[in-house]
Length: 208
Image: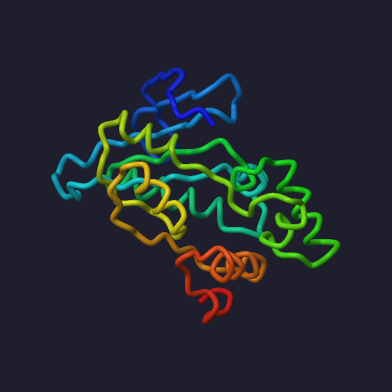
């Protein structure tokens, strides 16, 4: 993986969440080599934290485009955009579905869940793929280019915290928890039990 910025472009941007600046950072010739970043200035009333709020999210096309119900990815992105537009900060979006393994691998893993009752961890292992092969050097370079060395990171993923810290970013962890549903609870429990995510869904039921 190239860890050098290939190209960078920015423009003013307005969405249903509010206004800010849209950055595109390219690390290669392919779409999946791009990182999209929304930058939102802090509120003018001064009621904001000195360390900026940041969300680093990987693509989940099944949930974010087609609104799949078996994960919380759409809700995490929605909540992150709301919070960043309210408090100021940054949302970085990595165009790498399937936790960096690709959309084809992701769907093959989902199929194994249907046919062999495997969770996402075991399905990726059966396919010969690391369950979470994401690399956070590129997001760290984007943050550094934006002048950010210390951030409040919206995440539940300890790998993300470690990956950014190893790349030189100081992290203050901010929890991002979405209520489980009957469809999403098995996936969230798997993330807690096997991926080590900082959840407490094992002690809860849907809607808790």
